[in-house]
Image (cartoon, rainbow, N blue to C red):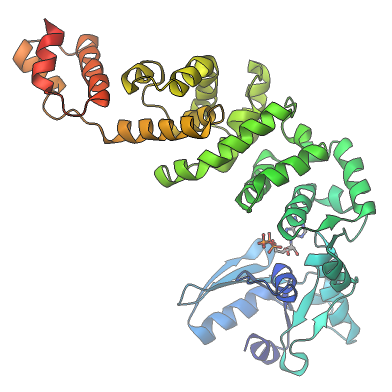
Length: 399
Ligand code: ATP
């Protein structure tokens, strides 16, 4: 239908990029990217009218999103060329338009289009031997300046290698290494780097991708003072084991922050400040990394020895999820499940009858540190024994 509407507007309409790649690989993909030769926003608005869908235009980029009533979304882009100023006189212009659009893409496997207009419906447009690369499992750039044009493609390359078990082609790899050493990744904003890393971490086997980035010497260009060692590798692997359990409990946990707890270990203050500014870590996060570093080894011991929660609480307190994650990287499987028990006990334990108000009323205490101290002490005791009689115990504490 999209193609038929394209005909009505006299525009060629293609589905492009990841959707075509995955279609040819027989993999499900619901990210539909449409490119039209013509005005993409006009096309999107027309589609919106036909289907009574919501259209969100981005005028600056000549793109738009169309959101259908069932929630399904397609993105529409305009194949950008001089085409608008001089309406097509020769039919080749159409072809070169989509061709140019595809040439600007990251890798050959993502640079195919399928036409949707009825007369050519389903026709594959493959100008750069893309299908062959796809069949042979090769990640190849379209031209030598590709990584300079957009250095985040270096990270994308690793992502596609890992996801499909493909390999970057030799020349591509060589250009990548050159541009990496040329410091091009450092020129990109931290936000974009972070986005690409987050995408890698969402893939099935993030450890494999991190190792690949290490082998390519890429990590150093993202985290300047990180020396990836065997120990660091083991810690990250342990952290990834614990990560899903933390995510069940704290929905907003970011994978990027999670690995940062390990990758930023041993950073001096100044470099920490530099990466903080670059990647936008909150100050609190950086503080908690520092806090965790100092108590890590004693805590590891305490947990592995299965000390009482109340003793662990004195050192660890009610920490944030990144502190727990950082700690988990140091623990055995059994240690991790003990830590999880600790986390769950902390969040389910509440003082029922004894409160600040209760202490002020019954013992005429003034609000301040003393009350807090008593409440903390009582809370710690309750962690070990949920059935304590709070009022009785507090009277003993006060005496
Ligand atoms: P995924 O399956 O992870 O969504 P995708 O290939 O669909 O992968 P998107 O980031 O959604 O990735 O991008 C859609 C298409 O846009 C890609 O297939 C590619 O053709 C193009 N593209 C995306 N990012 C870049 C980039 N940095 N440089 C060039 N082309 C890009």
